[in-house]
Image (tube, rainbow, N blue to C red; front, side, top):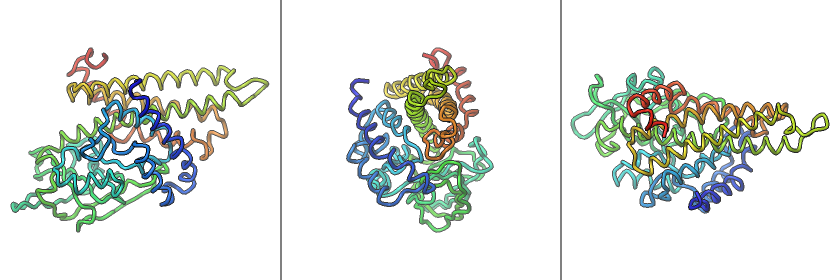
Length: 385
């Protein structure tokens, strides 16, 4: 990783200097930071060169390899309260958008001028995409009418554009399609916006689409390409979760070690007690193993490996890293004792926030299903080497 040292160092410095100092402010405010702090994060992200997600330079990003992107996401994971959510980025489906769509939505997003949202999940469908009922009925004149309801639409309350997955016919005989829907289009309403366990800047509202009109020009990637684009989206999102969970584990271990080395009980440092040192060793093993697994997936993607193999291994990385991070957070809370239950302690915030990583972008149970099927279809050797 020597050739990535500068990028890792810049990302780490950005997190240490810009993001971490704002965590407690965000926590005590219940999520959103003051506008001045939001703008400073955006400006500093560009100054440090850590914005743009996985997008190419031509698309307004930094043109990172998947490995480089993983290493940056790993550093972002060391921060709590979603303070990294203010960094300009956009979903990877825009890579397959038309030049006009990229000009209208992607480039401004990567300049920090707007947010996009991704509306896929539905209340009754849950983890089963075949149960999705949102439709986009063609009118025959280049227009489509969207009807349906989506929930857990992250950024849905502030987005300028919403990527909506919908079936082009009510019988779902064809594969779904992705549409870039302007958030101010008539017929879109927020029907619920409940608080969640974490104190993040933006919620995950439920949006209802009633006779929302879009055109052929709003289709991303082509009619019926929704499944394939979503699989690519899931691959990236799951690998990103793995990376951020690795970063979270590193921070939890760093803070726990620092506390255990300086806190004394019964005439000895906490770290001198096996009841503290052994859990720290377990956490270190979890973090190291998760990092190696995630970097292996990133390297496969960079090599141009079979996308279905990368998808299966990304699920394995998400499964392991999200569950390992939850174990690390629980151990850290225990090591800090009463302080570990205070919201001003990073361990407590991670303990709350990391729980969702075992749920969103596919539950742990769904990841196990994908991994098991990948073992069967891709082969044991391919999945494990």
